[in-house]
Length: 89
Image (tube, rainbow, N blue to C red; front, side, top):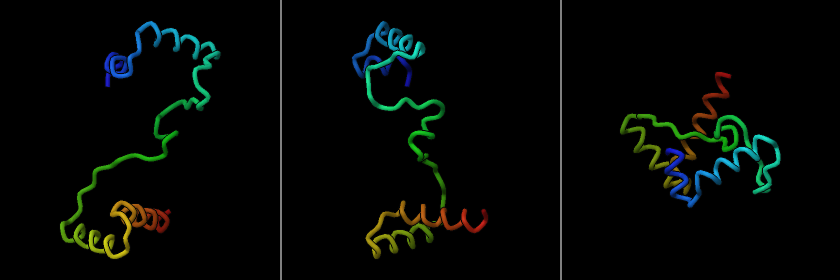
């Protein structure tokens, strides 16, 4: 999303954005008590969405298991990936 789109969405003026950026760069930005993270947002969030294609039969099996165990399909996929990564790591 472009900076101008974000500004419009949240009611921010270009002047406010520039003034905030200048205060932040000087080190005296005090608008929030939340931590400021440098680098990729993934460093702060810790997750990333990926698109993966599986055989239809495997997906159906995952759906069945998820329903049976009352967990999300994502939990099963994450668990399987963790197990695989630990086995090759």
